[in-house]
Length: 325
View 1 (cartoon, rainbow, N blue to C red):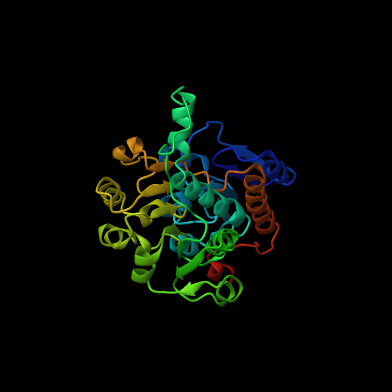
View 2 (view 1 turned 90 degrees about the horizontal axis):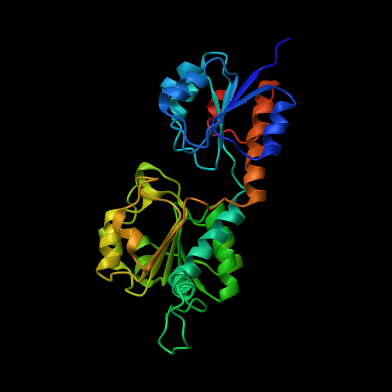
C-alpha cells in the first residue's frame, strides 16, 4: 500500500521531519527561502497533508491545487492569518497551529527588546566594538529605569500573561487592556484593567500581544503615539501591522516616544527605511520563537497533528473546528 504524501514548505528541525518520515512519504522544499506562489501551487499537488509556515500565503487557489485528497494544512506557528480559514473549511481541509509551546520564548524576547532599548545595549555594543570606549563617563549611554515603572500590556492572552508574570520580578505596576478581563493576572499579579487611552497615557513601557485581526490593524498609530509619554518605550512581538510603521517613524523622529523594540514589521520583510538608521530602535528578524527547544516543539506539534489527521483522528490544535463536525 502506498504511503500518504506530506509536503513541508521549508526545512524545520529534524525531530519533526523524522516523526513524519516514520509514517509517510515526505518531501521538503530544498531551498532556504519562501516558495514563490507558482512553486507552492505545483508542490502541493497530490499531497495528503502540507506543513506550511507563516510566511506562506495559503488561499483558495492553494487548496484547489492540493486536491480533494488533501486533509490538513498544519501551520508552523501560533498565528494563522496567512491562511484563508474560511476557504479551508469550504474545501473540507483542517487547519492547525502550534499554540502554547512558544509562550515563554516570545515573552522572553519581548523582555530582551524592552531591556535592549531601555538600556541602549545595541548602540553601546557598537560603540565599544569600534574602539570608542576610552574611559567611564557619567553621561555616556544614559538609558531608562525599568524596575518600579509602569508596564502597559495590550493583550492578556497566553503570551501577554506570561510577559506580565515576568514583570513582577521588576516590581512593576501592571496595567492591561484586552477584549476581556483576565481575573487570573489581576489576582496573581495585581494587574489593573484599564481602557486603551488610560494605558497609553500612564505606561512607561507598552508591549503588544494581540492577534492580527481587522480590528487590530494599525491599533497603534499617530493618535495613540501622541497620547504616550515622551519617555515611553513600545515593544511589538505580535504582528507587524498592529503598528502603523510610518506613524512610528514620525513619533520617534519627533520625540513623542523614547524608543521601540520590534520583532515584526508591517510589510515584512520590508521595513521602513528610516527605522534602520535610528539609534533608539532595536530591530530583530521575527525571532520571538527562535530557540532550539521551542522551534523543535513547534515542529513536533505540527507533525503530530498531521499524523493524527491522516490516521483518522482529530488533531490537537484545530483552528477551524467546524470542519471536524
